[in-house]
Structures are given as C-alpha cells and as structure tokens.
Image 1 (cartoon, rainbow, N blue to C red):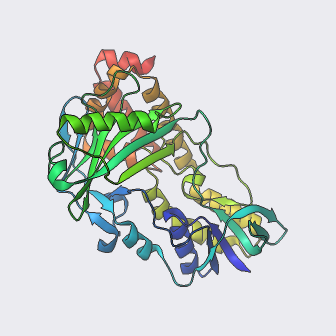
Image 2: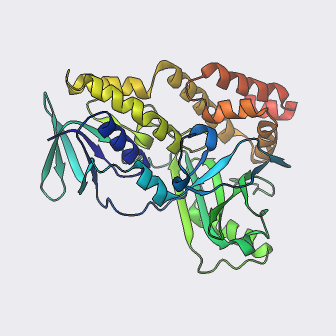
Image 3: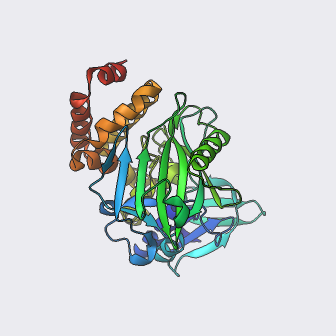
Length: 371
C-alpha cells in the first residue's frame, strides 16, 4: 500500500507524483506505458515557470510575434519545452512506477483499491486522476494540425528563431484558424494550423488542408514530414468534490480561452501534495477536500468563470471580427495580457484586462462582443 497513487504519467501526473514524495508521501504512478515519450509539443511563458531548468528547454526564441491584422512583438519570453528534459526534471526515483490501466477505483473508509485491467489491484490512501480531460461529443475544442519543417524551409513563412504565437492574417471566412510556429531546436520548426475554439472542434482534415495550402503557396513540400495532431477540450466545468482527486486537465486546469495547462499543473503540484500530506492522516475524505481547496480557491473559481465567459464571447464573434479582437488584445499593455493569460488567482486583474480591451475596442467590435 502507498499513500498516494497517481493515475496518468503525463507532465501533470509526474509533477504531482514527484511533489508527493517530496512531501514525504509514499507514491506510485500508474500508466499503461510509463516510458512512452510524450508526443505533443509544449510551451510556456518564462514568467509562469521561472525555475524551469535549462535541460527542460528545447528552444528559447529570440522574440515572439502575434498578429490580428498586423504584427506585434510581445514583451514576454516564450519557451519551448524539451519533453525528455522535462520528464527527467519531474522524475523522482522514490516514485514507484507501475505499468497498467485502471478499470475502477473502490473507495473504502480508510483507503481505496484500484482495479487493473489485467486483474490485479493496487491499494492507496488516496487516488489521483491525472489522465487528462475527457472530450465530450460536440464540446468546445481547440484543434491543430502541424508539421515539423527544416529551419531552412520554415524561414519562407516565419522569421528565423522566432515564435509565432498566433497569426490570424488571411484567416478563413468560416471557422477561422491561425498560424502557430515555434523553433524546436536542432534546425527544426513546428508550424501548425490552429483553430482556437470551435464547437465542435474544426476537423483535423480541414486544418491539414489549410496548412498544406499555406505551405504550398510558399513553395514548401511537406509530404512525408513528421506531423502533430492536437485536440484539447476547452470549456471544462470545475470538477466535483469526491474521494478521487483530479489533477491537470482532469481538474479543469486547461485555460478556457488559450488551451494552456502545463504551467498551472507545475505550479500547483507542490500545493496539492502539501494539502494531501497535511490531511491524509485525518482520513482520505479530509485529504481530498484539502486537495480540492488547494486546486480551486474562491479567487481561482472567479477567474475561471471570467475566462469561460471570454471563451463564449470569442466563439460567438463573427469570423471577420476575430482578427480585430486579437489586434485589440495584443495592443494591451504587457501586464494586462499577462493577467488574462496567467493570473489564475487575481480576478481583479483579469476583470481589469477584459474591461480595458472592451473600452479600447472600436464600436463595431464592441457591438459584436455584446451580441
């Protein structure tokens, strides 16, 4: 028996497992393939994860561009994560890794039993679900299709050693999408056609065709190059309180309007681990309540509600107004942009950023937002 069993070996699960052993909790991590590389490309703002070590950084672009109808340089450092380095940083030899899949968790008065697909069981004081968010059919999603280009070809559509956070110029008239591009290091650049938020999500086949057209127009042949597919549920309700502690995307830590979650998971892992460690001796129910309170204090709940409101407003905008919206957003002062994207527990700052954008917007965009 262990104190904590983390189900799911992605970045969020490993971050919490490592934090739990540092909080002196015996910890196991359950995943069908614990050693399988993480397939997706992750990125963070440096100010969100200031202690990220060099080994966990694949690329540090010299600048970050964003565009609605015109380009702007952003005054924040954007980092592309080295997945293997991040895994090493998050790994701790004291975590017991178990290969397998859970079928159900049976809660008992003083512990829980996790039943495995192969017929085995694991016993823990408390279980954590870090398997990601489950997409519901027809829900609001962010989707993207990308390919990895040699840097020598990528410069035909993006500046060298530059992250393109989003570029809406030339967006489609229906279900608009934007260009996202980041250097990966070692002479490689990921370019993605991304739908920020749609219900249901824009099909990957549509995004693939748009990216193919974009690359062909620049004389780039992407046939046979490595590809990446992204599908992120966005409009996630807060998790219900229960004996199983959710974490990462399973705990609705996905930013409703951007799809980012890894920085929030890394920041919250020690807080949740400390809460579990403080209350587990009182009982698993008390530990689960403490973990939920650590994840979702009232101020974070308020911010989450405002960001969901912003998501719904964005999704209702006429497609022709979407580039106008982001022109206004990227014209905000850096502290206002940072508040909306990263200030998870500062509702006053988030509300001020949203109000500032609305006040500065031209009347046509205001009318569209109000509608």
